[in-house]
Length: 134
Image (cartoon, rainbow, N blue to C red; front, side, top):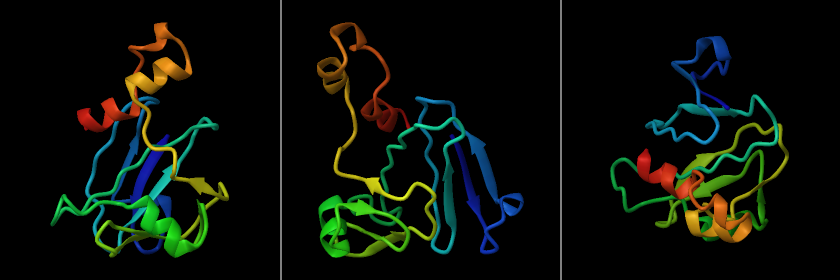
């Protein structure tokens, strides 16, 4: 997966930050108002577990229920506004080559991976662990 914060011209070569994140690894960075976060799946068939928090108030975070209610749709795509638990717009999806995003599933954890896959998968990395590591 490749991530890039790009300037207002939205050209990859003008990115102010670029990183290739290995599969299963966490990434944490501040995205400021007016900046664009571009997430590009280099290998295909990936899921990107994402959390958004306010730097000014870490108690303010992305709220899936409020967002879906305001979008009047279960899926997010171009034009969708992501709202916080305080009802404030946090981000807007300005472009989307995937078509629809489901944010209902939540993050996987050691326990859910064990139930989903098998007992021997108990110690594989999980989204929850990545959030804690980041």
